[in-house]
Length: 247
Image (tube, rainbow, N blue to C red; front, side, top):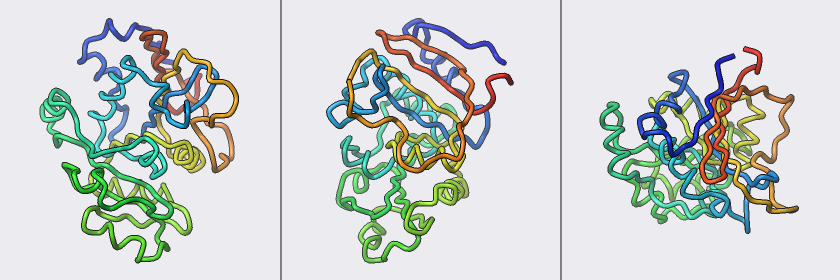
């Protein structure tokens, strides 16, 4: 097993943080979440209050590194996602890597219950993608066709394996998923998650809030290996890769 890196985040340069999150393979799906120390995925219904400036630095690096940012419609609505934009320094890093200045935004929705006039669609610097089940009535999808590309995959629910294949057929091979928990649960059940980037926030929330994975039951537990632990302001920023812990 490769040595686990333990470092304080503020000891790392930006180049070192980018290097710490280099994907092992050209096709890779990483999931990024924050949870409280007692396992809650939300505080007062949102993940944002669990996060802080410390883990936002890694959050921004992960966004800069991806080809496509995937999120469920519930997360997009609850967290108030706007158009996917990056800071000038993040765009400059992407240009230096030969990448477009910003990733593509992809929203997965079982019902297309979103506002096609929302900024996440109408103000996007690159044309976003809406992922829906193939049997969703055209009347629900048609309002989005002017503002987004549509990927139809699955019956009744989004088939994430088919959706992922469709994204990669477009050259969107590095996927960052920011949730929500039901999307993550579906990715685990389908065996699609290659990496979990988890920030453990130094907060006790107590009973009630959901876990970072919900919904569809996985057939079996998926072994992970810990790649690094970064500490920042009491937060533990963990990078887990799919695979046996004794590799």
